[in-house]
Image 1: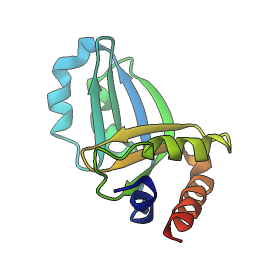
Image 2 (image 1 turned 90 degrees about the horizontal axis):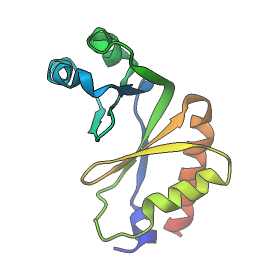
Image 3 (image 1 turned 90 degrees about the vertical axis):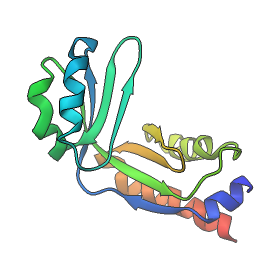
Image 4 (image 1 turned 135 degrees about the horizontal axis):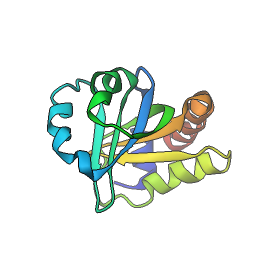
Length: 142
């Protein structure tokens, strides 16, 4: 499937609620299993050599924050789901979204799942970001 065809099939969804991006020290790794049992909505968990990053709703963070002392938090963010089953051989999908939003000085974070991409934007940029993405999708449908 081409890049244009992929965008033409994309639906834009905004997940309800505000989301936090949380940096957690690796010393709290043992608390992650306890935390994950309490989460119910969209979340993303990433481990690397330096830190643990958790992206989750404000509601879910309130359930687990006590497990992670000294966490660093970026908030509030909104999650825009680019809802399409995206094949792994499509080149430039996220780059295109990034370019569209960068032209308007909208900073993003991206979480890719197996089939979909999720774009995090500051809450104050949500309406503009959604409008820009939807306008691009409309152009791809022509």
